[in-house]
Amino acid sequence: MSTPGIVVAGAGQAGFQLAASLREGGFRDPITLVGDETALPYQRPPLSKAYLAGKTDAEGLFLRQPGFFAEHAITHRPGIRAVAIDRAGRSLQLSDGQSLAYDHLVLATGARNRPLPVPGADFPNVQQLRGLADADALRAALGEAKAIVVVGAGFIGLEFAAVAAARGLSVTVVESADRPMARAVSPEIGQFFRAAHEAMGVHFAFGAGVTAITGRAGRATGIVLADGRELPADFILIGIGVLPNRELAAEAGLPAEDGVRVDAFLATPDPAISAIGDCVRFPSPFAHGLTPDGTVRIESVQNAIDQGRCLAARLNGKPAAYGALPWFWSDQGPHKLQIAGLSGPGDASVVRGSGAAFSVFRFRDGALRAVESVDRAGDHMIARRLLAAGTPLTPEQAADPGFDLKALAMARP
Figure (cartoon, rainbow, N blue to C red):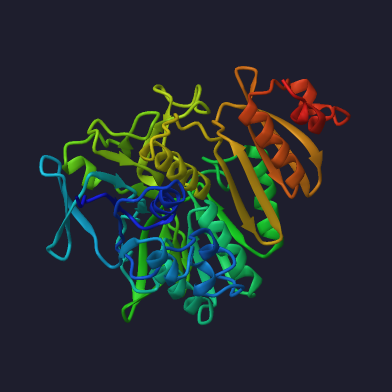
């Protein structure tokens, strides 16, 4: 007897990983991936790094080649958006007017760029970076622009700024906070990357809000700051964060205030619907003291992959609570930033190393919560072991250059 099988709304990293892991685990029923982009599922992190710098092409981004989907009996429906869920009838309505019945629906709808709500933000040379089409537009702009303004000193904005500066372009980064990546990393890391970018020729305007984007002849020519200054630009990148694509779940009556709410097993209150990836708010053992209810929403490839694998195991009859350690990375010019764990603004910092290669160990309530490493891959790997295992480490031990972190990480409990 035929069955509708599993339908996945979203064909990004999380949705693809779920489908691949289901087949690896022996799942035999139909799997359908629905994605609003026309390309094959692809990696997003290189878009602001290697792809933007011209070090890889679009084919090098694909998670698998076309033959993989036919070989593994995974139906990929590109260029189609999921628009509504009929929970009672267990069907997903699509933007082309069709609907898909499901035994189990997985929401992997991802996130979208947060818009800049000022006049002039719709000029064609004001862009954002989220998908492959955006990256293609940015590559073209880098070949034509001379003066660039980046609004937002987060990972995407700084990665783009580094690529643009390496091409000899004039780059100014505007940020409302007082340092780069203020909401994501320690002051020590922020200060280092400010100096590193300034050494690359990037200029910063901190504590600056944007009130308007000026233009002439249908194109942006600059931005106006809250203090009245105007910065000229022939290209502007907006990178001020993302919003979870929660509307599909919310309109179906599922809890989705700041991301689709799931339990430790990535299940929504509807037993026929689960959710994974950037759109999801979930309980994490690594969020102690960060949020009132211990839930977080994480935008990372690691989280998307690990949640896809975790949910696939449950749907294949091997349920386990999701408890993967979050980790992240960012390539900015010659420097690689790697982060293990989750830190908060009130966490204490202990610096290990010096100069251009060092790590910042973040402590909350006396316990190690995260480690941020600049060009110290060894520290990052040790940190992942320590945090994943919950191995105790004191601030005094972290500060002691003679203390053997590797031995501690490798020690058996």
